[in-house]
Length: 210
Image 1 (cartoon, rainbow, N blue to C red):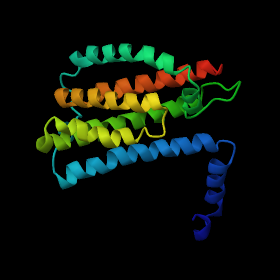
Image 2 (tube, one colour):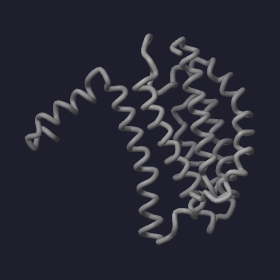
Image 3 (cartoon, rainbow, N blue to C red):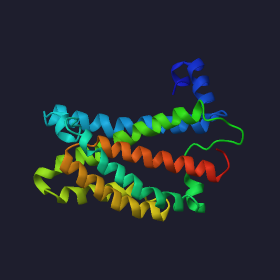
Image 4 (tube, one colour):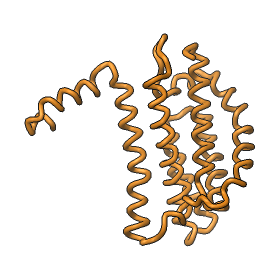
């Protein structure tokens, strides 16, 4: 497309990014950015422009959330043994981390930068599923809004290891219920990031790359 409008210089730069030695990193970062835009920009437009409502009512509440942290720390502690067990499986090691280190590579800069993008897309994911969907549907469906959210959320895990796909059902139920109760997605996003980060680190350790 860039070449078609005479921008050969930018076209060559783009070709180097997406077809050169860093194509894996560049593709993943682009995926993360698109995820964030899709999960955040579209719901924000709907809430603010179509519904003409405040975003705080869709799980972005900050007030009073500090006292809720202990609940999520307990959930993380409960999840850790299962994550450690799963990290020993071939399916887990074949899937994670999305951006894999080569032998001798350091975490900085690519892996660290990727983890920043990866974390951001989890915040967007939590806002879309546990914020926009749960709190957008609760006025019509009540508590059933949690179960309505779980269906599309679990579809994201169809290509993941079976144990992770099953765990996503339980995780979606717990995080959706807590978001409905606390009216906030922030601790849920933190929990999701902590679990995903632990999965990546354990996979790198199992592969002898960390």
